[in-house]
Image (cartoon, rainbow, N blue to C red; front, side):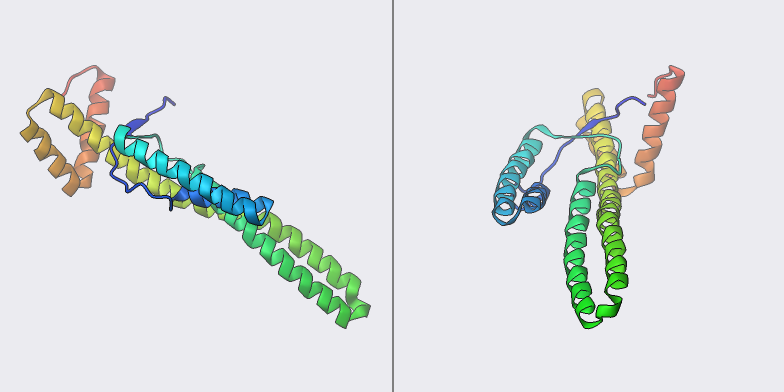
Length: 195
């Protein structure tokens, strides 16, 4: 399938508080305390620069995918949650084993199986949930980029008034924009030209 990337004009406020800051903090957190702060600072700076660049040059958006930055963030959050659960479970199983020394091997086996399942499931569940959230956001951006592409194309081939009317219609009737795009693709496939 060919790459269907488009340029989306954005007006996001560049700030240090962004996904890249969160991602940097999570990656740094895997290494321990201070690296989390350093990762957050580096990620926040890079994210702010990215937002500034996208506002100036536009953001390249492609077909929505469940494998995205939100999936990575969700997986890391799930890993941290699983890690915290593992620590709490370990402490409870040690405490339980101390109280019931006769059943210590059974409690230890249950704790190990539970820990292993949690350490695997946490990141996977987090990545799936994050990926779905990210894909929804990508779908919205992709549709907006399609509309902007149609308006830019009409602005170049017609008057600004017509392009403004089309932009207004597309923003108020989402199905209309989809129909225009589908008709244009059908006409291109058939070798015809829409007037």
